[in-house]
Image (cartoon, rainbow, N blue to C red; front, side, top):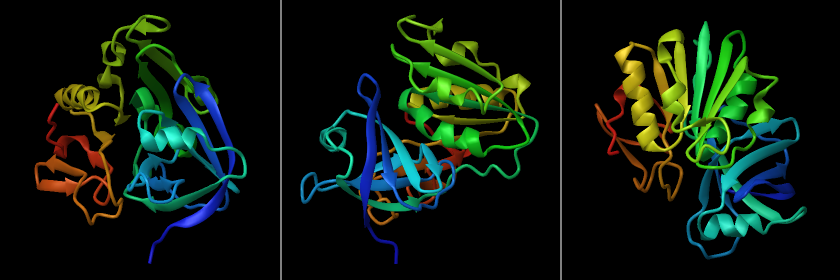
Length: 245
């Protein structure tokens, strides 16, 4: 039976304003797009936090997270040697086995987090990264050795294209597209891909309570009825998802 295990934090660094990379020492399993439930407290907050795998090497796993609530505020205070509990890997990640030709990774904000491990594990294809941010960019330079090109945008125009990343993304030149970010952005990417009949796979960012499919908090509307983002996803075929945004 899958259960929480205790580990030690080996690094918790700020990579941009409000964005941290938390690394935990140990041997871990997990595919690109899968996630872990994290908690570093006793009884409050009640719920653990689902965070996707950002990177994984032999003796360490890393999570990139944005500080925006009680749980992530507590994560941001963790220091080397502090204890943290992890449950995972959970969910279904990106199926990279059938991808060929020219592939695009499209990310919005903290949705760039799972794309780094995805880029590292995706072999034998031509790979481009498209990443959109509000103001400051982060971690995109880490992708240089794994992708053929990087295109990025900021809402404010501080760097890169001023506007949305979808302004400069053309799905017609790609064999497949993998996407993660705000639902309104993913809806746009799916519509663009569907118009050109380009396969698109999206990682849904939903609130989760249990992470194992029991509580149904993370229900996701699809053409086959409601699915659990934690158990049936978080990665879905974009053609199957019905967006609220």
